[in-house]
Amino acid sequence: MVQQNQIWTYIGREVMRYILAIALLMVCIIVEWQAVDRLTIQAYQVRYTSALERFRGEPYIYNNRRTDKYLDTYEMEFQQIIANITEEIRCFPVEKSYIQEINYVDSWYGERTYGGERKHEGTDIMANSNIAGEIPIVSMTDGVVKNLGWLRLGGWRVGIESDSGVYYYYAHLDSYAPNLQIGNPVYAGQLLGFMGDSGYGEEGTTGMFPVHLHLGIYVYDSNGTEISLNPYPILTYFEDSHGILSGNNEKCWKIGLFHRFFMGNPLEFSRKYAIL
Ligand SMILES: [Zn+2]
Image (cartoon, rainbow, N blue to C red; front, side, top):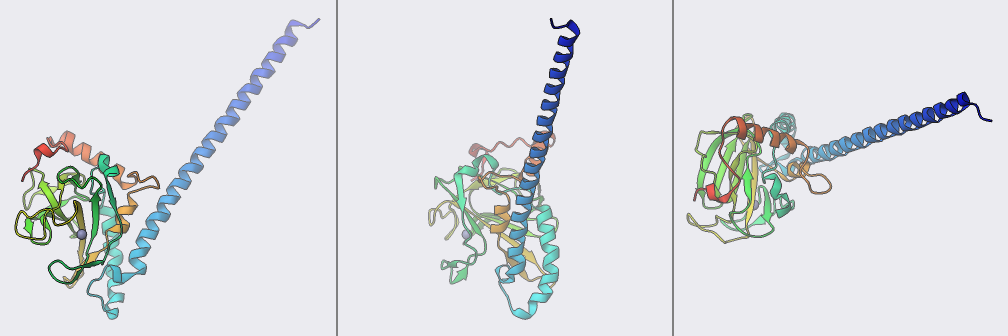
């Protein structure tokens, strides 16, 4: 005959066992979670570092007027420039929800022939649909509109000068966001216009090449010499292995939404608001 108190002791032990098991499981989950977190962060760091290494290890990719004797001088300045750029770039130049609609490769310094023999000073972000006026282009940084309007090569372009003096060049646009004016401030994530195929001719020329954004990044050394950087490693920094925007881009979107909400920016990422 089992006594009443023996049953209760038994139940008590079982309950304790379950509580212990659940606690153990939770500890395991938390440990795993943190490990995954740590690995993810490490993966980003490795990716980011290797992107930066490409700049540092191959100086010729950023100095289009390279002569070897300048390299030491540039190296010093370049450390600072890279620090500035990685600090100030917050956004991938294509609006987040359109990221599956684009592709790009490293075409840095590829041969170009229109307008004479020259090297490709930038990255081309292609529209998969090849339809102009669909994909919103946003500013990668805070800054000021420095240049706006037609260029024979660049078509409808926007040039943004960041606070640190880096020049971000967005070319071949289809149309502009309505509130852009030379001298006006822009914030990271602000709509600049829509991807297009303008350029390579007189004002208004389109269709000379597939729809894409040409992104150029220019810095200036202490002598005022313009140096073209390869945007490709910077762009890849914003993607994880699934091609989803991440890292600084989250920051970009929080900032963008903050501005849109509190600064009363009425812009929607819609073609109907565009000018041209
Ligand atoms: Zn290009």
